[in-house]
Amino acid sequence: MVGFRILLIVCNTPMRIALIAPPFIAVPPLRYGGTELFIAELALGLQAQKIDVTVYTHGESTINVPTRWLYPAGEWPLRHEMEASLKGLNHFAWAIQEAAQDADLIHINSAPGLSYARFTDVPMVYTVHHAYDTSLVEFYQSYREISYVTISDFQREKLNLPHMRTIHHGVNPLLYPVLEGKREYLSFLGRIAPAKGTHLAIEIAKKAGIPLKIAGEIQPINKDYWETMVKPHVDGKFIEYVGEVGMDDKAELLGHSLAMLFPVQWDEPFGLVMIEAMACGAPVLAMPGGSVGEVVKDGVSGYVRQSTTELAQCARDLKLPARTVRGYMEKKFSVARMTADYINLYTEILRDGVAEPEQIVA
Image 1 (spheres, one colour):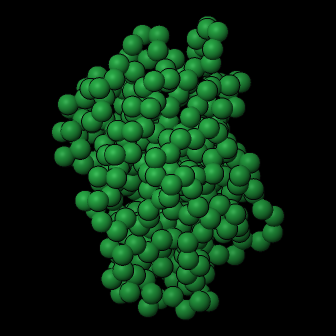
Image 2 (cartoon, helix red, strand yellow; image 1 turned 60 degrees about the vertical axis):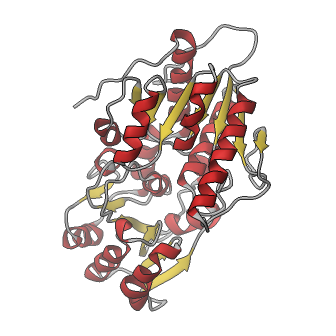
Image 3 (cartoon, helix red, strand yellow; image 1 turned 90 degrees about the horizontal axis):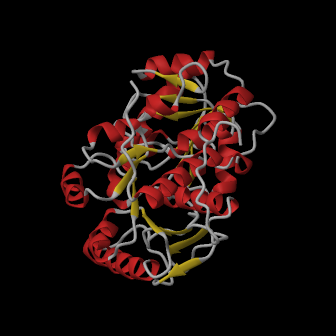
């Protein structure tokens, strides 16, 4: 595979990896679930490379790799924060105890799992999926021997941990067809929330004079935002809300989009939906925030601008061919590249005991 360096362990059995997901959303997710989509893509990528991978999730998950579960069903949105936290702790305690019996390496994807690192000698990798949080960073300082993976260089620059590197997310291009035909609307895909800038997407569409389709989850905490800032503009014609979407509907929505709007108002850790849009050939029109500048190559896979007026102008003047956008995604954000990066990391840890830190290239 040209461009990918996969280090191999010479042994009689394949590398055994335990991938531990939170117990609340299915793997892969039916609708919302960025972390769970990442876990699904990585698990399948590892399996394709002859890695022995087991996913610890809940009983409704449909990922086509071996799975283990303690809870038969998921829970989303979370109804009781305290009870949900206890459920997560119980899940991770069980999963790590089980995984430690057979796995060569345990890969966790939520902070509670770190609490059990003291009870096993099996090496751990932890992928940091969240935005910067001071209390969590202080928690991580208690587990400095763990190998941490950040999902953007922006995220990594904010953390001060000795064993840390960036591995950007990737998706399987085969799941995201580049559809033929005219693209006549803009799209917004994500949580309906102030931080995601749904109201700004509406503003951009109106300034550009191009219809907008909005898809995403309305969580209870954002109900007032929906009622006051978004719903009054939804007329079912120029501004349309299509609800939550699964994989097929997501590909259809993005595949017919002139561009996807991503006017974030927070420090986005990665923004998986950006590479999903690119995979469908839809350029990303974004505001700067967190990882956006790492993911969107200005003038190639989209545009990053400071204001709604500038992004509206970009939408009107857009001339980025769908195949060019897709080609950039395949080069930079494929599941093959992501999988190779994780195999390199796992191999290094199993060979040397720990991953050496990666230098940030300016």
